[in-house]
Length: 257
Length: 190
Image (cartoon, rainbow over all chains, first blue to last red; front, side):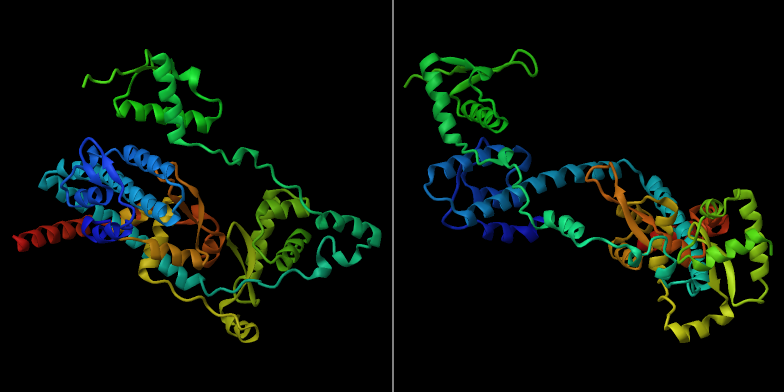
């Protein structure tokens, strides 16, 4: 995916009515402008936090009354393109470093070795061609074994009609509905969670993640996401003594006016 | 022919696929050594152009095949046709898969220096290679291997029957010629 080839496609993908305004550390403005600047190498893609873009968009979505599937699909496409660009840069860096390590003589030896290896397989392919010429036209038995010689011919089996009916009956029954309780619609709202955590912070000044996080995995993830957002907005400080320990969240006092 | 050889002849006649020595031994209640000896006798009986069939060891087992000078009459009766020939690109790709299997698309491309996506698809359509799992490398690329049909069409008993890959290595003169060509190409570009 070359920047030149995708710039027009990506820009056109953002609907004019959905101008997502972003407030990132490296950029402040519409999302589509951010994508354009990345493609033109005017902003370093490594400094763009895709999670921040997603968080801001989710907040915007939650504030709307209606859900626009088309606009959201286009947003998902743009974010996916950004993630792919970042992942490709990871791979390209590794390959370029490997090539830069070779001096001209080493590169020539490497090329010769590859050509020699290719020649070996080309010769093997030629040998297969000779075998093909000798053997591919051979004819083998293709007819199936006659039914009369099968170990248990079906014609000899006699089944009572009642037994057949009993065997077929379960096939006609409605199968049980699969249990989808693990897929139940869970209404999670980042905006509502932020409001809840802000209320707790205003009341108590501090709390621990384990005390406020709900039990379900999805809701716990949402609470964690909301914590990151509070931290990014400068509203809360997060502290953790050791890896995987509880997270203590403390309200950051607003700067004096 | 002794009784065991006659029973093997009957089994191989009736089976629509190559039958392994172990299966023949189980069906005849005989040892594999006895079956192998009887198969050698059977092979000698059907060799030399005395019959319209020959005994072949392909595809992991033993089977009868039509003698070459009788194939035309069989094709006339059955309408069977010889499969289309393989291009050099397909043969190269097939050789890489046969010797490196299980091989990924990237393994093939690394040897041939070009994308082999089309070649692998074509070989898959012709039943000569098949997908046989996924690699543990990042991205879990598909692994390819040769099929039983590959063994049959190339007259191979099993994969070990393929000649050693080292036997196809370029000789010192060929390597020197390659090296000289690389150098002269580089000098022409300067």
